[in-house]
Amino acid sequence: MSIYFIGDIHGCFDQLQLLLKKVQFNKQNDQLWSTGDLVSRGPKSFEVVKYLFSLGDSLKLVLGNHDLHLITSYLNQQNIKNMNSDMISFFQEKESHDLIMWMRQQPLLRIDYRHKFILSHAGVYPNWSLKIAQEYAYEATKIINSDQYINYFNSIANIKNNYWNSDANNIQKFYFTINSLTRMRYCELNGSLNMKEKLPPNKLFKNNNIKLIPWFEMHHAIPKEYSFIFGHWSALNGKGTPKRFFPLDTGCCWGKNLTLLRWEDKKIFSQPFYY
Image 1: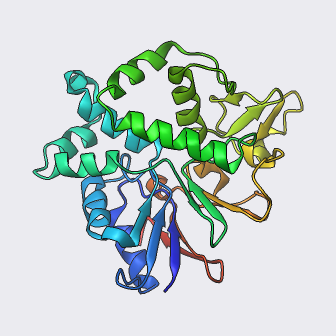
Image 2: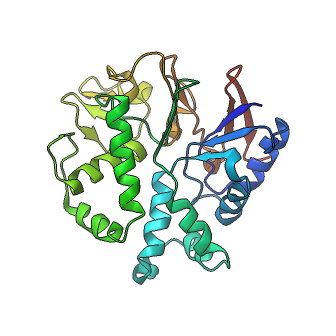
């Protein structure tokens, strides 16, 4: 059995199929762990979700920010006029309801204690321990699956504080958890999240006045024997992180590559968008 990690697919179904064929992926024996962002931007979001659903227990998925946007839009369809065309076409498919409800049940964080790796879409807030990260992720997933989800979503629109506070109320904790696990890139010097900057560090820090730290460069409360597998930050192009951090979003939907990591030997496999 092999464990494979796949970066952000973003509707690139054909590239996904070619990449899995390249490594002879077998759902009977292998596992596929996905960094999330299955949908949007690429041409075949519905096909991606339908295929991954068909993998059953051999798939281990975490939700990304685009997946959450799809779920939220579906549950809030009175705003349909403001939706992207690819979401509207997704909703028109016969199986869309069942697939979106399946996505809604997926976690924001997965931890494998045996192999010592952590999977999330954007990363894990550096000041969180394993226990705290699990607790916050679990509570957020419960909210996403609850009847209160849209109320929470509407309530967080006006929250501006991106600083972790263990004494915060449930809505504030939900907001910070979602941002940390699905949208985080940089932290301020005081530990708060910066949600605006997207440039990779090698380009951003040419300006000496910038006082931001990539989340993976900060001191982490999680033990050093754990590795982090994440996506979201396509501008990194899979490079520039410390040894135990594996960035797998390499911008396939932008015409670059879809990336797969085989855990046993840490070998990287790539499939270009154009082939």
